[in-house]
Image (cartoon, rainbow, N blue to C red; front, side):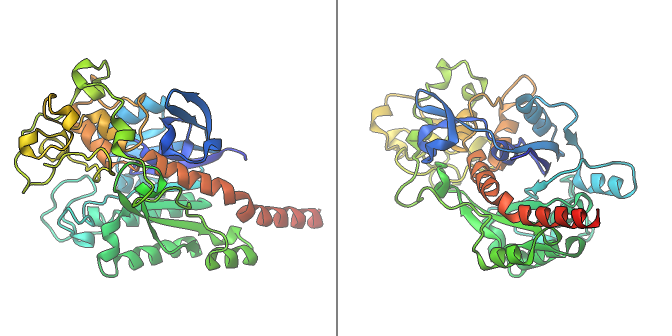
Length: 399
């Protein structure tokens, strides 16, 4: 396939960007389709690169820009600016978004998360994440999906992918309102019924569920293809390769080959929260079970980071490690559970551990993004080639 350009909004450290592009190292147990890998090194394999490439990214967090550019090594791609300001500038002719085949955006989830206050559209946080004491407006954080919609309208990609927390599903009509707003972009996108994907079903050693909206431009599709998409004969959602209940990648598979932080040369592994154990009644005070999936890696730091191991008296279950000190997960261990490669540097001389934890916890697991990319690759030609052939035939008739 030819290269396809991606414009990424709310990019964070680039979990979805990395997943869509591929080309990163991962534990061999994370994937069942070994045809996806082109290199092997011990227990790790390198995933093949896809046809997708990020040509635009943005976020308001300076740490996200530093981490993203540190890994992707691309200049003039990541914009440290709010989507609201960028869209306004684009509509005023002060900024031009690059052409893109795909637009992605994980619009902020705090206002829809079960772990948060669930203010939804009535959030009192601004698009710059500041407190707004006035009535909510179109620019407050709970309405940022609208600005993703506007960005899609300006760029007019063939496909868009929007992501949020599973909690969105249980907030009344919120899911349907967002889906319908996306359907009305520029006269019509087919927006598939949003689907909740469990990361554990895709080889990620974590209980993490996210709702995914996928939209496709109607004007580029034949009626035959539209019917196949709407009937489910053509699916843009990836099929599970694992089962989060019976056939999953364990925490042990993901992180137990790592040495202790004190023995590591990796800054992201050396750094971990020193917060004490507060008791079982508090969030983030449990030990990661090596034989199960990890709980969701949260965008938190300090006392909300789960324990890598607990002492026996605090309920620790890893008997073989009772001789080792009680401690919380390191940044690298959180990143491993999220399926980031070890050459992604989160803690640097410019990014502290506290920010690094948040970047990791906010990200889409790259491996989940890779599954989405491989499914898009698999169906792309069958969706768009017929319309292309039809256009070329019409041009020949005119000539």
